[in-house]
Length: 273
Length: 241
Image (cartoon, rainbow over all chains, first blue to last red; front, top):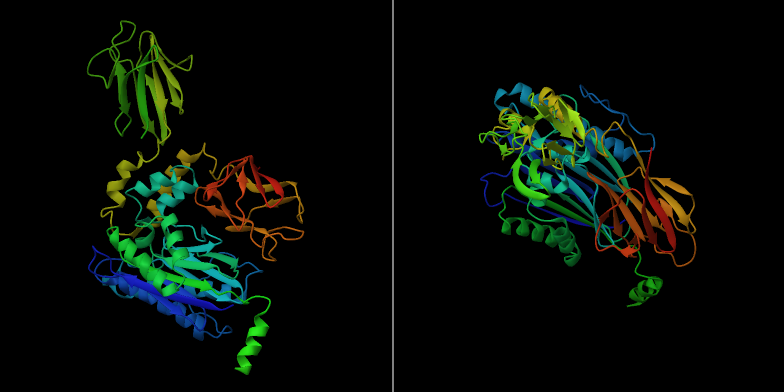
Protein backbone atom coordinates (compact mmCIF):
# COMPACT_ATOMS: atom_id res chain seq x y z
CA UNK A 1 0.00 0.00 0.00
CA UNK A 2 1.20 3.48 -0.85
CA UNK A 3 1.30 5.66 2.28
CA UNK A 4 1.77 9.43 2.42
CA UNK A 5 2.48 10.95 5.82
CA UNK A 6 3.52 14.01 7.77
CA UNK A 7 4.03 15.04 11.37
CA UNK A 8 4.17 18.31 13.31
CA UNK A 9 4.99 19.11 16.93
CA UNK A 10 4.58 22.41 18.75
CA UNK A 11 5.29 23.66 22.26
CA UNK A 12 1.81 25.22 22.52
CA UNK A 13 0.90 28.63 23.94
CA UNK A 14 1.50 28.12 27.63
CA UNK A 15 4.48 25.88 28.25
CA UNK A 16 8.09 26.81 27.71
CA UNK A 17 9.46 23.40 26.76
CA UNK A 18 8.22 20.68 24.46
CA UNK A 19 8.18 17.27 26.12
CA UNK A 20 6.62 15.54 23.08
CA UNK A 21 8.74 13.58 20.62
CA UNK A 22 7.84 11.87 17.36
CA UNK A 23 9.43 10.05 14.45
CA UNK A 24 8.06 9.22 11.03
CA UNK A 25 10.09 6.52 9.26
CA UNK A 26 8.68 6.76 5.77
CA UNK A 27 10.71 3.88 4.33
CA UNK A 28 9.26 1.52 6.96
CA UNK A 29 5.86 3.20 7.31
CA UNK A 30 6.57 3.34 11.02
CA UNK A 31 5.06 6.12 13.13
CA UNK A 32 6.08 6.78 16.74
CA UNK A 33 4.75 9.41 19.12
CA UNK A 34 5.59 9.96 22.77
CA UNK A 35 4.58 12.52 25.40
CA UNK A 36 7.11 12.83 28.20
CA UNK A 37 6.60 13.72 31.84
CA UNK A 38 8.83 14.54 34.77
CA UNK A 39 10.35 17.72 36.13
CA UNK A 40 13.06 19.91 34.58
CA UNK A 41 13.94 18.69 31.10
CA UNK A 42 13.45 15.03 31.92
CA UNK A 43 10.13 14.62 30.15
CA UNK A 44 11.96 15.40 26.93
CA UNK A 45 14.67 12.90 27.80
CA UNK A 46 12.09 10.18 28.40
CA UNK A 47 10.01 10.81 25.28
CA UNK A 48 12.98 11.06 22.92
CA UNK A 49 14.50 7.95 24.47
CA UNK A 50 11.21 6.12 23.86
CA UNK A 51 10.99 7.22 20.25
CA UNK A 52 14.65 6.57 19.42
CA UNK A 53 14.72 3.16 21.07
CA UNK A 54 11.69 2.00 19.11
CA UNK A 55 12.92 3.40 15.80
CA UNK A 56 16.28 1.69 16.32
CA UNK A 57 14.78 -1.59 17.47
CA UNK A 58 12.47 -1.83 14.46
CA UNK A 59 15.08 -0.84 11.88
CA UNK A 60 18.17 -2.60 13.13
CA UNK A 61 17.28 -5.29 15.58
CA UNK A 62 18.07 -8.73 14.33
CA UNK A 63 15.07 -10.83 15.25
CA UNK A 64 17.24 -13.71 16.38
CA UNK A 65 19.09 -11.61 18.95
CA UNK A 66 17.85 -11.96 22.49
CA UNK A 67 17.00 -8.82 24.40
CA UNK A 68 19.03 -8.47 27.55
CA UNK A 69 17.31 -7.70 30.81
CA UNK A 70 13.95 -7.00 29.31
CA UNK A 71 11.00 -8.81 30.84
CA UNK A 72 8.24 -9.61 28.41
CA UNK A 73 4.89 -9.44 30.13
CA UNK A 74 1.51 -10.53 28.88
CA UNK A 75 0.89 -13.21 26.36
CA UNK A 76 1.74 -13.01 22.73
CA UNK A 77 -1.08 -13.95 20.41
CA UNK A 78 -0.17 -16.53 17.76
CA UNK A 79 -2.04 -14.75 15.01
CA UNK A 80 0.02 -11.57 15.34
CA UNK A 81 2.33 -10.69 12.47
CA UNK A 82 6.10 -10.71 13.15
CA UNK A 83 6.07 -6.91 12.89
CA UNK A 84 3.39 -6.62 15.56
CA UNK A 85 5.45 -8.79 17.92
CA UNK A 86 8.57 -6.82 17.12
CA UNK A 87 6.91 -3.48 17.70
CA UNK A 88 5.63 -4.70 21.05
CA UNK A 89 9.10 -5.90 22.04
CA UNK A 90 10.49 -2.52 21.00
CA UNK A 91 8.11 -0.86 23.46
CA UNK A 92 9.26 -3.24 26.21
CA UNK A 93 12.83 -2.26 25.39
CA UNK A 94 12.01 1.46 25.46
CA UNK A 95 10.31 1.09 28.84
CA UNK A 96 13.30 -0.72 30.22
CA UNK A 97 15.78 1.85 28.90
CA UNK A 98 13.88 4.76 30.45
CA UNK A 99 13.44 2.96 33.74
CA UNK A 100 17.13 2.04 33.88
CA UNK A 101 18.25 5.56 33.05
CA UNK A 102 16.07 6.95 35.83
CA UNK A 103 17.57 4.44 38.27
CA UNK A 104 21.10 5.42 37.29
CA UNK A 105 20.51 9.17 37.38
CA UNK A 106 18.72 10.22 40.56
CA UNK A 107 17.77 13.60 39.05
CA UNK A 108 15.71 11.75 36.45
CA UNK A 109 13.56 9.94 39.04
CA UNK A 110 9.90 10.04 38.16
CA UNK A 111 10.40 10.66 34.47
CA UNK A 112 8.16 8.73 32.13
CA UNK A 113 6.50 8.85 28.76
CA UNK A 114 3.42 7.77 26.86
CA UNK A 115 3.93 5.82 23.67
CA UNK A 116 1.63 5.35 20.71
CA UNK A 117 3.08 3.73 17.62
CA UNK A 118 1.82 2.30 14.36
CA UNK A 119 3.62 0.19 11.78
CA UNK A 120 2.08 -0.55 8.39
CA UNK A 121 3.16 -3.69 6.54
CA UNK A 122 1.12 -4.57 3.49
CA UNK A 123 -2.43 -3.77 4.47
CA UNK A 124 -1.83 -4.66 8.13
CA UNK A 125 -1.45 -1.92 10.71
CA UNK A 126 0.21 -2.94 13.98
CA UNK A 127 -0.38 -0.71 16.98
CA UNK A 128 1.48 -0.73 20.28
CA UNK A 129 0.29 1.69 22.90
CA UNK A 130 0.83 2.81 26.52
CA UNK A 131 -0.58 5.96 28.11
CA UNK A 132 -2.99 8.66 26.98
CA UNK A 133 -1.74 9.64 23.54
CA UNK A 134 -4.10 8.29 20.89
CA UNK A 135 -4.38 6.64 17.51
CA UNK A 136 -7.45 7.26 15.34
CA UNK A 137 -8.66 5.90 12.05
CA UNK A 138 -10.79 8.01 9.72
CA UNK A 139 -12.66 5.76 7.28
CA UNK A 140 -15.62 6.73 5.11
CA UNK A 141 -16.05 9.86 7.20
CA UNK A 142 -16.18 8.11 10.59
CA UNK A 143 -13.43 8.84 13.12
CA UNK A 144 -12.71 5.78 15.24
CA UNK A 145 -10.40 5.51 18.20
CA UNK A 146 -7.93 2.63 17.96
CA UNK A 147 -6.46 2.98 21.45
CA UNK A 148 -7.76 3.14 25.02
CA UNK A 149 -6.39 5.85 27.28
CA UNK A 150 -4.56 4.48 30.30
CA UNK A 151 -5.70 7.32 32.48
CA UNK A 152 -7.63 7.15 35.74
CA UNK A 153 -10.64 8.96 34.29
CA UNK A 154 -10.78 6.66 31.23
CA UNK A 155 -10.69 3.64 33.53
CA UNK A 156 -13.56 5.16 35.52
CA UNK A 157 -15.51 5.61 32.29
CA UNK A 158 -14.86 1.97 31.34
CA UNK A 159 -16.19 0.91 34.73
CA UNK A 160 -19.27 3.03 34.27
CA UNK A 161 -18.43 5.36 37.15
CA UNK A 162 -17.96 8.52 35.10
CA UNK A 163 -19.65 9.59 31.89
CA UNK A 164 -17.32 10.73 29.08
CA UNK A 165 -18.51 14.30 29.74
CA UNK A 166 -17.60 14.09 33.42
CA UNK A 167 -14.21 12.66 32.47
CA UNK A 168 -13.55 15.63 30.20
CA UNK A 169 -14.30 18.05 33.01
CA UNK A 170 -12.37 16.13 35.66
CA UNK A 171 -9.31 17.63 37.31
CA UNK A 172 -7.82 14.14 37.39
CA UNK A 173 -7.28 13.93 33.63
CA UNK A 174 -3.50 14.01 33.95
CA UNK A 175 -3.33 10.99 36.22
CA UNK A 176 -2.03 8.01 34.24
CA UNK A 177 -2.29 4.38 35.26
CA UNK A 178 0.37 3.24 32.81
CA UNK A 179 3.41 4.90 31.27
CA UNK A 180 6.88 3.95 30.07
CA UNK A 181 9.64 4.22 32.65
CA UNK A 182 7.55 3.96 35.82
CA UNK A 183 8.27 0.28 36.44
CA UNK A 184 10.74 -2.25 35.04
CA UNK A 185 7.81 -4.00 33.38
CA UNK A 186 4.89 -2.53 31.51
CA UNK A 187 1.66 -3.78 29.97
CA UNK A 188 1.48 -2.86 26.31
CA UNK A 189 -1.82 -2.69 24.43
CA UNK A 190 -1.50 -4.28 21.02
CA UNK A 191 -3.95 -4.01 18.16
CA UNK A 192 -3.96 -5.12 14.53
CA UNK A 193 -6.15 -3.37 11.99
CA UNK A 194 -6.65 -4.15 8.29
CA UNK A 195 -6.30 -0.96 6.32
CA UNK A 196 -8.19 -0.02 3.20
CA UNK A 197 -7.45 2.50 0.45
CA UNK A 198 -8.26 6.08 1.49
CA UNK A 199 -8.01 5.31 5.21
CA UNK A 200 -6.45 8.13 7.21
CA UNK A 201 -4.49 7.44 10.39
CA UNK A 202 -3.94 10.00 13.11
CA UNK A 203 -1.52 9.75 16.01
CA UNK A 204 -1.68 12.59 18.51
CA UNK A 205 -0.71 13.67 22.02
CA UNK A 206 -3.36 14.78 24.53
CA UNK A 207 -2.48 18.39 23.71
CA UNK A 208 -4.68 17.94 20.64
CA UNK A 209 -7.55 15.88 22.04
CA UNK A 210 -8.04 18.13 25.07
CA UNK A 211 -8.31 21.23 22.88
CA UNK A 212 -10.09 20.03 19.74
CA UNK A 213 -13.26 17.91 19.57
CA UNK A 214 -13.45 14.69 17.56
CA UNK A 215 -15.96 16.01 15.01
CA UNK A 216 -13.58 18.92 14.37
CA UNK A 217 -10.66 16.52 13.95
CA UNK A 218 -12.69 14.41 11.51
CA UNK A 219 -13.68 17.52 9.56
CA UNK A 220 -10.11 18.74 9.34
CA UNK A 221 -8.80 15.39 8.12
CA UNK A 222 -11.48 15.22 5.44
CA UNK A 223 -10.99 18.80 4.27
CA UNK A 224 -7.20 18.68 4.03
CA UNK A 225 -5.95 15.67 2.10
CA UNK A 226 -2.23 16.52 2.24
CA UNK A 227 -1.05 14.81 5.46
CA UNK A 228 1.56 17.40 6.44
CA UNK A 229 -0.88 20.25 5.89
CA UNK A 230 -3.61 18.43 7.86
CA UNK A 231 -1.21 17.86 10.76
CA UNK A 232 -0.25 21.56 10.75
CA UNK A 233 -3.91 22.62 10.67
CA UNK A 234 -4.75 20.47 13.69
CA UNK A 235 -1.78 21.89 15.63
CA UNK A 236 -2.86 25.44 14.71
CA UNK A 237 -6.40 24.68 15.85
CA UNK A 238 -5.18 23.38 19.23
CA UNK A 239 -3.15 26.57 19.66
CA UNK A 240 -6.09 28.79 18.69
CA UNK A 241 -8.08 27.13 21.46
CA UNK A 242 -5.46 28.06 24.04
CA UNK A 243 -2.66 25.58 23.38
CA UNK A 244 -2.48 24.57 27.04
CA UNK A 245 -0.11 21.70 26.39
CA UNK A 246 2.48 20.57 23.88
CA UNK A 247 0.74 19.24 20.82
CA UNK A 248 2.00 16.63 18.37
CA UNK A 249 0.15 15.25 15.36
CA UNK A 250 1.12 12.61 12.80
CA UNK A 251 -1.20 12.01 9.84
CA UNK A 252 -0.79 9.08 7.42
CA UNK A 253 -3.02 8.47 4.42
CA UNK A 254 -3.42 5.24 2.48
CA UNK A 255 -3.45 6.15 -1.21
CA UNK A 256 -5.97 4.78 -3.67
CA UNK A 257 -4.45 1.65 -5.18
CA UNK A 258 -5.87 1.71 -8.66
CA UNK A 259 -6.89 4.65 -10.71
CA UNK A 260 -9.86 2.77 -12.11
CA UNK A 261 -10.56 0.03 -14.63
CA UNK A 262 -8.84 1.85 -17.45
CA UNK A 263 -5.65 2.77 -15.66
CA UNK A 264 -3.62 0.41 -17.91
CA UNK A 265 -4.80 2.43 -20.89
CA UNK A 266 -3.45 5.60 -19.37
CA UNK A 267 -0.17 3.97 -18.46
CA UNK A 268 0.16 2.74 -22.03
CA UNK A 269 -0.54 6.12 -23.50
CA UNK A 270 1.99 7.59 -21.08
CA UNK A 271 4.69 5.31 -22.48
CA UNK A 272 3.99 6.33 -26.04
CA UNK A 273 4.18 10.01 -25.14
CA UNK B 1 -22.84 15.65 42.08
CA UNK B 2 -25.23 13.59 44.18
CA UNK B 3 -27.99 15.60 45.85
CA UNK B 4 -30.98 15.36 48.15
CA UNK B 5 -34.24 17.17 47.39
CA UNK B 6 -36.63 17.82 50.27
CA UNK B 7 -40.22 17.55 49.03
CA UNK B 8 -43.54 18.34 50.68
CA UNK B 9 -46.61 17.20 48.76
CA UNK B 10 -44.67 17.21 45.47
CA UNK B 11 -43.37 20.71 46.12
CA UNK B 12 -39.60 21.17 46.20
CA UNK B 13 -38.65 22.78 49.52
CA UNK B 14 -34.87 22.60 49.45
CA UNK B 15 -32.01 20.92 47.62
CA UNK B 16 -28.57 20.14 49.01
CA UNK B 17 -25.53 18.50 47.42
CA UNK B 18 -23.85 15.65 49.26
CA UNK B 19 -20.17 16.31 49.81
CA UNK B 20 -17.56 14.77 52.05
CA UNK B 21 -19.50 15.95 55.11
CA UNK B 22 -22.73 14.17 56.18
CA UNK B 23 -26.02 15.91 55.37
CA UNK B 24 -28.11 16.25 58.53
CA UNK B 25 -31.90 16.18 58.59
CA UNK B 26 -34.15 17.27 61.48
CA UNK B 27 -36.50 19.86 63.03
CA UNK B 28 -33.73 21.99 64.54
CA UNK B 29 -32.72 24.86 62.22
CA UNK B 30 -29.02 23.94 62.44
CA UNK B 31 -29.65 20.94 60.14
CA UNK B 32 -28.62 21.00 56.48
CA UNK B 33 -32.17 19.98 55.63
CA UNK B 34 -34.45 21.52 58.32
CA UNK B 35 -37.93 19.97 58.37
CA UNK B 36 -40.40 22.09 60.28
CA UNK B 37 -42.86 19.51 61.57
CA UNK B 38 -43.62 18.25 65.07
CA UNK B 39 -43.43 14.63 63.90
CA UNK B 40 -39.76 15.14 63.12
CA UNK B 41 -37.09 14.86 65.81
CA UNK B 42 -34.59 17.68 66.36
CA UNK B 43 -31.77 15.61 64.88
CA UNK B 44 -33.63 12.97 62.95
CA UNK B 45 -31.28 11.36 60.44
CA UNK B 46 -28.19 11.90 58.34
CA UNK B 47 -26.95 10.91 54.87
CA UNK B 48 -23.33 10.40 53.95
CA UNK B 49 -20.89 8.53 51.70
CA UNK B 50 -19.25 5.42 53.04
CA UNK B 51 -16.92 3.35 50.87
CA UNK B 52 -18.37 4.81 47.73
CA UNK B 53 -21.96 4.12 48.77
CA UNK B 54 -24.57 6.56 49.90
CA UNK B 55 -25.95 5.67 53.34
CA UNK B 56 -28.89 6.98 55.39
CA UNK B 57 -28.75 6.55 59.17
CA UNK B 58 -31.62 7.16 61.58
CA UNK B 59 -30.46 9.04 64.70
CA UNK B 60 -32.83 7.30 67.13
CA UNK B 61 -35.72 9.44 65.99
CA UNK B 62 -39.11 9.09 67.66
CA UNK B 63 -41.15 8.43 64.52
CA UNK B 64 -38.55 6.72 62.40
CA UNK B 65 -36.94 7.03 58.98
CA UNK B 66 -38.38 5.20 56.00
CA UNK B 67 -36.74 4.33 52.71
CA UNK B 68 -39.38 3.52 50.09
CA UNK B 69 -41.98 2.48 52.77
CA UNK B 70 -39.52 0.40 54.76
CA UNK B 71 -38.48 1.59 58.22
CA UNK B 72 -34.69 1.56 58.50
CA UNK B 73 -32.02 2.14 61.10
CA UNK B 74 -29.37 2.33 58.41
CA UNK B 75 -29.64 1.63 54.72
CA UNK B 76 -27.74 1.99 51.47
CA UNK B 77 -29.42 4.48 49.16
CA UNK B 78 -29.79 4.11 45.42
CA UNK B 79 -30.56 6.65 42.77
CA UNK B 80 -34.31 7.42 42.76
CA UNK B 81 -34.94 6.23 46.35
CA UNK B 82 -37.19 8.29 48.62
CA UNK B 83 -36.50 8.86 52.31
CA UNK B 84 -39.73 9.49 54.23
CA UNK B 85 -39.65 11.53 57.41
CA UNK B 86 -43.11 12.45 58.74
CA UNK B 87 -45.11 13.89 55.86
CA UNK B 88 -42.01 15.05 54.04
CA UNK B 89 -39.93 12.98 51.71
CA UNK B 90 -36.44 13.40 50.38
CA UNK B 91 -35.59 12.31 46.84
CA UNK B 92 -32.18 10.79 46.31
CA UNK B 93 -30.30 11.76 43.15
CA UNK B 94 -27.15 9.66 43.06
CA UNK B 95 -26.58 9.68 39.31
CA UNK B 96 -23.15 11.20 39.80
CA UNK B 97 -22.26 9.96 43.25
CA UNK B 98 -18.82 9.22 42.00
CA UNK B 99 -16.24 11.96 41.77
CA UNK B 100 -16.79 12.94 45.36
CA UNK B 101 -15.12 10.21 47.34
CA UNK B 102 -11.95 11.12 45.50
CA UNK B 103 -11.99 14.59 47.05
CA UNK B 104 -10.04 13.44 50.04
CA UNK B 105 -7.57 11.47 47.96
CA UNK B 106 -6.95 14.21 45.47
CA UNK B 107 -4.67 16.21 47.75
CA UNK B 108 -2.41 13.30 48.43
CA UNK B 109 -2.04 11.86 44.96
CA UNK B 110 -2.12 14.83 42.65
CA UNK B 111 -0.17 17.74 44.03
CA UNK B 112 0.12 19.49 40.66
CA UNK B 113 -2.92 18.76 38.63
CA UNK B 114 -1.58 20.08 35.35
CA UNK B 115 1.49 17.89 35.46
CA UNK B 116 0.98 14.48 33.99
CA UNK B 117 1.82 11.82 36.51
CA UNK B 118 1.72 8.08 36.92
CA UNK B 119 0.15 6.54 39.98
CA UNK B 120 2.46 4.25 41.87
CA UNK B 121 1.26 0.74 42.38
CA UNK B 122 -0.25 1.13 45.82
CA UNK B 123 -2.15 4.36 45.24
CA UNK B 124 -3.34 2.93 41.96
CA UNK B 125 -4.61 -0.23 43.59
CA UNK B 126 -6.46 1.73 46.26
CA UNK B 127 -8.06 4.04 43.75
CA UNK B 128 -9.15 1.21 41.49
CA UNK B 129 -10.59 -0.69 44.42
CA UNK B 130 -12.54 2.37 45.43
CA UNK B 131 -13.65 2.73 41.85
CA UNK B 132 -14.66 -0.93 41.69
CA UNK B 133 -16.79 -0.61 44.81
CA UNK B 134 -18.64 2.26 43.22
CA UNK B 135 -19.01 0.57 39.88
CA UNK B 136 -20.59 -2.64 41.17
CA UNK B 137 -24.04 -1.82 39.90
CA UNK B 138 -22.93 -0.55 36.54
CA UNK B 139 -23.22 -2.25 33.19
CA UNK B 140 -19.48 -2.27 32.57
CA UNK B 141 -18.37 -3.56 35.93
CA UNK B 142 -15.94 -6.44 35.68
CA UNK B 143 -18.13 -8.63 37.88
CA UNK B 144 -20.72 -9.00 35.12
CA UNK B 145 -18.91 -9.88 31.95
CA UNK B 146 -21.22 -9.45 29.00
CA UNK B 147 -20.22 -10.06 25.43
CA UNK B 148 -21.41 -7.56 22.87
CA UNK B 149 -23.04 -9.56 20.10
CA UNK B 150 -24.68 -8.85 16.76
CA UNK B 151 -27.54 -11.22 16.04
CA UNK B 152 -28.50 -11.31 12.36
CA UNK B 153 -32.26 -11.22 11.86
CA UNK B 154 -32.38 -10.87 8.10
CA UNK B 155 -29.97 -10.70 5.16
CA UNK B 156 -27.16 -12.57 3.42
CA UNK B 157 -24.07 -12.88 5.62
CA UNK B 158 -21.71 -15.70 6.53
CA UNK B 159 -22.75 -16.23 10.16
CA UNK B 160 -25.88 -15.95 12.28
CA UNK B 161 -24.16 -14.22 15.17
CA UNK B 162 -20.99 -12.24 15.66
CA UNK B 163 -19.35 -11.57 19.01
CA UNK B 164 -17.57 -8.22 18.81
CA UNK B 165 -14.01 -8.77 20.00
CA UNK B 166 -12.03 -6.10 18.16
CA UNK B 167 -11.66 -2.36 18.56
CA UNK B 168 -13.02 -2.08 15.07
CA UNK B 169 -15.71 -4.19 13.39
CA UNK B 170 -16.45 -3.63 9.72
CA UNK B 171 -19.80 -4.52 8.15
CA UNK B 172 -19.35 -4.78 4.37
CA UNK B 173 -18.30 -6.81 1.36
CA UNK B 174 -14.57 -6.16 1.87
CA UNK B 175 -12.53 -9.32 2.52
CA UNK B 176 -11.36 -7.51 5.68
CA UNK B 177 -14.90 -7.11 6.98
CA UNK B 178 -15.88 -9.08 10.07
CA UNK B 179 -19.52 -9.14 9.07
CA UNK B 180 -19.17 -10.10 5.46
CA UNK B 181 -22.02 -9.02 3.20
CA UNK B 182 -22.88 -11.34 0.32
CA UNK B 183 -24.49 -10.47 -2.97
CA UNK B 184 -24.16 -7.98 -5.78
CA UNK B 185 -23.45 -4.29 -5.37
CA UNK B 186 -22.84 -4.44 -1.65
CA UNK B 187 -20.54 -1.65 -0.38
CA UNK B 188 -17.04 -2.56 0.83
CA UNK B 189 -17.69 -0.77 4.10
CA UNK B 190 -21.41 -0.32 4.79
CA UNK B 191 -20.98 0.58 8.46
CA UNK B 192 -18.49 0.05 11.27
CA UNK B 193 -18.54 -0.40 15.02
CA UNK B 194 -15.86 1.10 17.27
CA UNK B 195 -15.28 -0.11 20.81
CA UNK B 196 -14.61 2.90 23.02
CA UNK B 197 -14.20 3.52 26.74
CA UNK B 198 -17.90 3.86 27.46
CA UNK B 199 -19.33 1.37 24.99
CA UNK B 200 -19.76 0.43 21.33
CA UNK B 201 -20.33 3.13 18.72
CA UNK B 202 -21.91 2.56 15.33
CA UNK B 203 -20.52 4.81 12.60
CA UNK B 204 -21.38 5.34 8.97
CA UNK B 205 -19.62 3.61 6.10
CA UNK B 206 -20.61 4.40 2.56
CA UNK B 207 -24.16 3.82 3.80
CA UNK B 208 -26.04 5.52 6.61
CA UNK B 209 -27.33 2.83 8.96
CA UNK B 210 -30.66 3.03 10.78
CA UNK B 211 -30.76 2.47 14.54
CA UNK B 212 -34.26 1.61 15.76
CA UNK B 213 -35.61 2.99 12.51
CA UNK B 214 -33.83 6.35 12.56
CA UNK B 215 -30.80 7.21 10.39
CA UNK B 216 -27.72 8.03 12.45
CA UNK B 217 -26.19 11.50 12.29
CA UNK B 218 -22.72 10.67 13.55
CA UNK B 219 -21.30 7.86 15.67
CA UNK B 220 -23.98 6.67 18.11
CA UNK B 221 -23.52 4.55 21.20
CA UNK B 222 -25.36 1.27 20.91
CA UNK B 223 -27.67 0.12 23.69
CA UNK B 224 -28.63 -3.41 24.57
CA UNK B 225 -31.36 -4.53 22.17
CA UNK B 226 -30.88 -1.85 19.51
CA UNK B 227 -32.10 -2.76 16.02
CA UNK B 228 -29.60 -1.93 13.26
CA UNK B 229 -30.47 -1.87 9.57
CA UNK B 230 -27.91 -1.32 6.82
CA UNK B 231 -27.47 -2.48 3.25
CA UNK B 232 -30.30 -5.01 3.38
CA UNK B 233 -29.13 -6.54 6.67
CA UNK B 234 -31.22 -6.36 9.81
CA UNK B 235 -29.59 -7.20 13.13
CA UNK B 236 -29.88 -6.81 16.88
CA UNK B 237 -27.09 -5.50 19.10
CA UNK B 238 -27.25 -7.34 22.43
CA UNK B 239 -25.07 -7.97 25.47
CA UNK B 240 -24.89 -11.71 26.08
CA UNK B 241 -23.98 -13.19 29.45
